[in-house]
Structure formats: structure tokens, C-alpha cells
Amino acid sequence: MAKNATLISAEESWISVLEQMEDDMARLRRCALDSEELFELPTSWSPPEDVGPLPSSLAPRAQAIFMEMQELAVVLKDRRDETARQLRAVDSIPRSMSSTSVYLDLVG
Image (cartoon, rainbow, N blue to C red):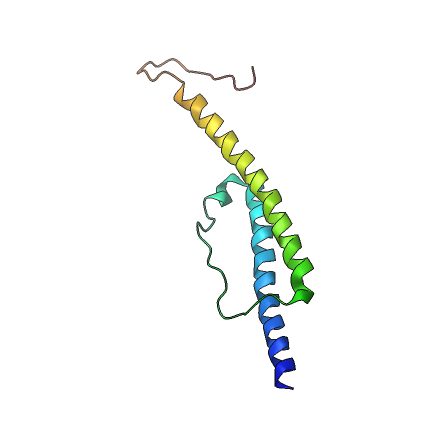
């Protein structure tokens, strides 16, 4: 009976970890659309401790989270690249002490 209780405890622990990861993925998706929220993202992650190996019954859920992470990595990379292009465009504007307005055409 103790082994069964241990399996349930490990599964419950992993369910909690996976739920947190799913919440993080949802937040990342929102952040990918909202530039302001991107600056509030944590910059590091620590793997869970003392949960043991992932139960095989939760492997499909963990795999789905992993696939979503890969998709989000592409989206966030695209956002980063777009931001870098915008920064390069801003940096290309000559800096002078003129009172003339400067307009920058990013499309053409």
C-alpha cells in the first residue's frame, strides 16, 4: 500500500509542476502579444526538486508542454528580432540639435 501512496504523491506533485508550467506558457503567450508585459518576465527557471521521475501517465501532458515551449521560442525569437530591427532603425537616425521634425519610414 505504501508504494501506491508514493506513486499517487509523485503524480500529484508532478501535476502541480505541470500546471505551473502550463500557467507559465499561457503567460508567455500573452506576453508575446504585449510588449510591456515582456519586461516583467522572469529571466531564470529552476527545475522542481524532490518530485522524483515523471510518471509515465503524465508523459503526454509533459510532451505537450515541451512542444508549446518550442513554438513559443520561435514566437519570442521573432519578437526579439523585430525589436532589434526597430532599434537599428532608431539608431540610424542622425542625432542633431535641429528643431526640424524627423520622420522614419519603416515600411518603405
